[in-house]
Length: 366
Image (cartoon, rainbow, N blue to C red; front, top):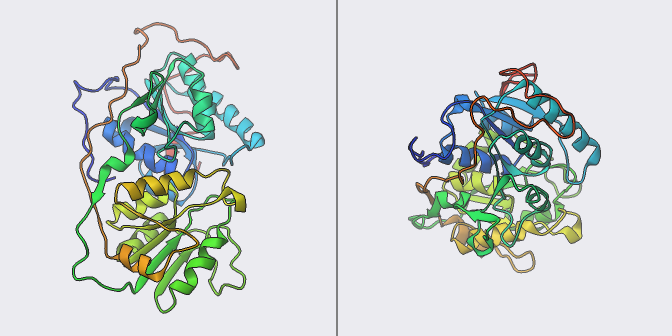
């Protein structure tokens, strides 16, 4: 993540030494937590990550210590049970001075255990949630020892503190000069399985005729569209294609949007609709509306979007700014030598200092 400031050591509310547990699911949750880790000031050598294995995590966390968790889809109880077992192992084999998450299922499996062990614990709700917490956030908020944060001041309260947004890293840029019609485009929908977004490709393919277009299709069925399926692509290659593109079209996922914004692009965002089985709720509409409000993206309407809208977006730009540090609320840290609470579920002690068989550098195999 570029353009980020670090907090001075005397400003930081946490210990400057010791390992920090960073835990989240993939995609936008991972991109956000990586950005906040920089803004908080966690040195890379202190970071121990728990997330899902994919091209994004292997690229973004290169050189970090990573524990790859089993992929767990929304409401996937079978694999969530595996996450709970993994959390017991991680806490038994490692010692952490702080734990932090930007959400989804790994947050529920890990953060309550961290808090029960006396580890200062923080949960930052995703920028996808503009009007209240997600189901994960609602569960986490039931644990009073976990500090919770929203990225929207409109719904901050005594329980949910506002410290800024991941989108504070960007501002509208100057118009493209001279104006042009796009010749190269990237269309992307992320890599989460189980929620195909064929409707996006059906809509934009006719509008992009005559352009050089790369389609990243996820798990959508491309039959009859004349588009070769490309479920995923290494994150570095995708970034290079976006940098070279005149036009970026994307589903309104936080991770994909951030990738476009970091390349200086003003993306055209199509939000998934749960009525068509494209996601479990309409949070992507909230993301697209927020980025449109900030002047960072164009929120496309399926019924009315035109080629002119796409050309207009291709002639706008985004610049990276230096946001203020993300200041975590001070937690009451346990005194040196005090014994943390055992995990209520497995009763295992915190275990030896550090890194048993599950931890390795990103890019290597466990």
